[in-house]
Image (cartoon, rainbow, N blue to C red; front, side, top):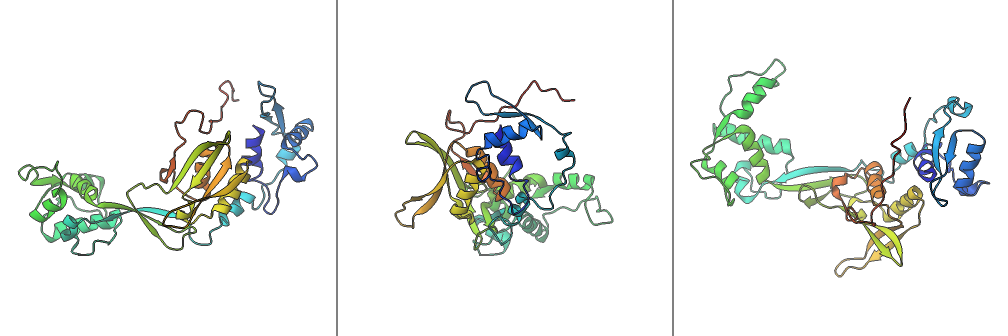
Length: 332
């Protein structure tokens, strides 16, 4: 479709500092501009859809045209400038999984601080340090190589080693678990199973930092919902609503402008009243653009898709349609 080609290919690859706004040209409308380009045999050939009101599609690109063969890429495009100036002068957004020891696991950490956070390598280092301190880590007959790293055979043997569980380690792994093994059957555990059980018993937290955030924030859980995208029907029109942007330091006004330029539909801000907090802002854009919004969050603001809840997914007639691709195209 010409709208997708214009929004996703032409505008992002324009030279930095230019607008490439068809409304400001003599053509006024995109369809008139694309027909002019096709009539002049410059770059493309158009084809009409099956219906009279269907959008024009680009069926062929004239790659042998002089304008195409003599083109040299711009030193910096608008998309490059957007990546460098995405509205955040700080470091890029980072989302990391962290672990916090429970009360039963504090003896392993030699600390009474319940609020201390560890990433996975640091948490496993605590486990290995405790096993060495109590002599529960058996020595392996396979030695390390010259660089001090374990070979594949040595690493496999180490994962299969049986570790004897002392009372402190047993309580840390099984205390309070209704499906815990009995003491007689859980006297030893393979090293790989011990590591997995140890990590599963730790409290999982997600640390979010960088981007436009003033300071890092913590959310409980390994995959918390940070941003919500939903679709609704208001006054007979479909709209897409995005909430939770302020959690990641994304300005709602700037995101609304980005969506409006991306999808070519009107976007605005809405206030959601709250009882014990200031009103929260949501971005509303006309049309069904849930997938486009999530892709934009991932590419522009580096927000992983697993942290965005798409409430429109699976709703018949209330989610963005997938672009159909021709199946009868033969490639040379």
